Image (cartoon, rainbow, N blue to C red):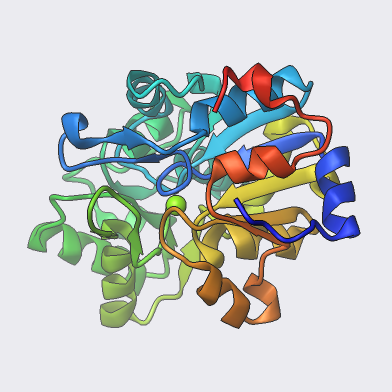
Length: 294
Ligand SMILES: [Mg+2]
């Protein structure tokens, strides 16, 4: 690794960071089309282990809403990544909190897989039944719904025409996966609904301030002492910079060092690394040996 010397400010931020929030896809792992195709990215397990051993709080935030946090943790464990269910944040948790605080007991119309619907259900969110009047919905919540057919479109549109707010777990156009990017389903549906109804899309996951707030709370760390590591300038990097956290781009997924250099200030990371081994090697007072070797 021929990294240039670390600027003093970045060195200080790494040394004094009290918590680290990792992205998952393109940062810790590349999921394949099947579980057998999935891989852990180099240094992912070691970085988590070493940072934990250094006394720092560690968690991961994915914009994915297909799987529950338990399902994601299980998939990560299969790849040797030591993160547990309680250390996985998804936009579904943000959705549950936003819906409760904003709409109280008014029901919402939610579209998604278990990663959204099961989480909302478990948290007691009032969900409209399939056959209920859609105009009763306070909001339409869109996640990774791979069965979003015409009837659902019509119900969602009727809710939105009647004044429901339009929330989505993520509007990322794509995310990093093994061999090729995966096209984003949630944003595709949400922006399609915006097109047909004129509603504004509100994003619950990264880079929303609400997502950042929840992550900082989860880690028990102030924004200024939090490091956010991810592969997407428009998601992790934008979110971290807006909150005054330290933004680290790893070039193992969506965006490259060239993209970072050309990025406007709001999405230009504090540090660019070519992978988590480089990040760990640069980190003052973090013992790489605690990561079990790299
Ligand atoms: Mg990513």
